[in-house]
Image (cartoon, rainbow, N blue to C red):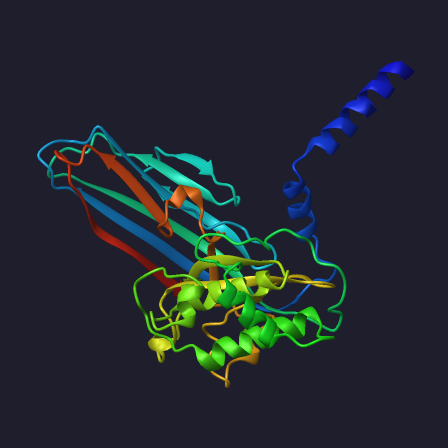
Length: 325
């Protein structure tokens, strides 16, 4: 019996030692040392609608669509209810933990349309973070360069060094990056996904560039930062503040953990404090990660079909409806 217990203990020790290092680090970054204060909660009714039309002469041999599912995101939001139509789908998960409903529409005949409708009820918290303790070690996860986050680029590294001052805390350093972005970038919806380095030029910048540059500057300084994509419930009195489909950032601060920052909405000095370490309840998370593999460079949903020479699938509609209860 004792020999069996020893063998089991050695086996579990072997499993622990052979886990990928990145997985161990990811678990560490998901364990903050302090919790945010919940100021209030807003409940939304959300509907995502996608309509696809087969305009080709015959049905496709393959046609799949993957739609990212809004899920629980501690401490930001909870999904109260979810209804997915049509009901014949499978759920798949990507490398960031995002979940998708995968539909098979290969039987879509010429001239026919297929509709996807997903209805949610989601509660979203407004959160405030205490950054009084912002010293200590940082994990190594989410500090590497990747597509659209060129943290190894010499121009990005040089700017990060210029904005950093000795004896700064991590929070003060990221705040310097945040203020620089707000003071120097000009919001222009460009319809493209240029990334961090392009934000330093004249390519046009919207939420993807604002967020990518803040992440790149942070990572260039060894500070973990990651990308969040979701929805923004806009104030109808000011629809120009940003688009409904939106992106923002989480940065890892020692003593606190992952902290939300929205550099796009914080571009004005009048609103800047309100979007640094303060999560407003009009943000609804859909996916985490800058380049989820399931989306293949797209956002929120993607689809594949073939053959292209005899099949043409047109996107007739792809929209969101958000109503505050």
